[in-house]
Length: 382
Image (cartoon, rainbow, N blue to C red):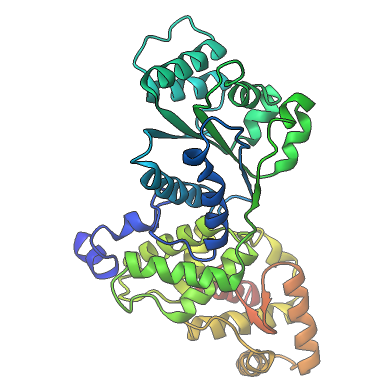
């Protein structure tokens, strides 16, 4: 397997597809990173003045965490000569309780024993340690949505009011969440503390995902291993089925590499993407084909055969599908329907999410064309 892996992936390439890997540049997030850096630059300019915590929001896989880490890295370099700035990034999806979050913060700043101390006492101890050493803390609470639901913003309130009565600001919090409206469940006293810049991260478009996938495949795969149509398929699936989630695209790209290895292929094509998709996130309901009439099965069989025979094609025109349909109908000695009738049936398959449309052409995104064809042959000849 190692020999085969070497032919598909670069040495260490699979790590470049892991969600924990942050590339030097994030395509299509330059504006958000600049806004964030501008907001955080105030840390070195006015550490004793009021700081309004920035808030990053958007769906999963839209670059919030990666943008934050790139911005923090830049800010740390910029302030290095002026101050000691610690950077603590707490994923609240892992540390799911307020106290465990506070513990995580204290572990990064102080080695003092924490047993028996409450959350506010721990935070005060952290602040005291920073004050004693004349140091500062950039604190990122990531994925705080569920935590806010549980504690109604109590942790956010403790973090944002820590400086009250101390004079000089030592702690600079940033909040990352999927939906900023979750703040509406918190008391007004909490919301009044979170009035900083709000930076939106929208889902990636199909076109944006193309450049993201291309960037990662250059890092992860040997040259010319992934076809251009495979890139289109991954980007389409991730935009339409994955909701514009870049993590979804990377998981699909990674999975398709293993499908290619399993089948002994030296290149990754569209059919490998479909096979990875049906394992990773199957979208065709089981049993849906059992309720389809014979004439419709023959049409879908023609579609599946077309994609099976041309395994690295991303999409077909209705004209191409009708040509495949005429060929299959002739071999089965079936009554031939008109092109309009075939187009109407294709629309029904689109409505049932077996087929999709991309720029007016028909796509089979979430099931292997070979598997679908074999299933249809079984049903047609039953």
